[in-house]
Length: 67
Image (cartoon, rainbow, N blue to C red; front, top):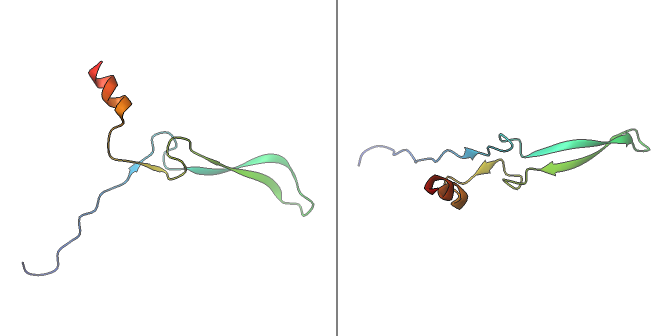
């Protein structure tokens, strides 16, 4: 083999539920004593805040195809 070899990469699959925006800040209303908005962080329940899913098909998808 001559020359450098390129590493194979696997493209991550974007979560279809959140479109890759896995964590968002949501204002809960009002401001604190310093004037900052009160916020909470909400994570996507499908990908658990990662923004990606595995490349494998889920078992539910396999069952739907078989039905």
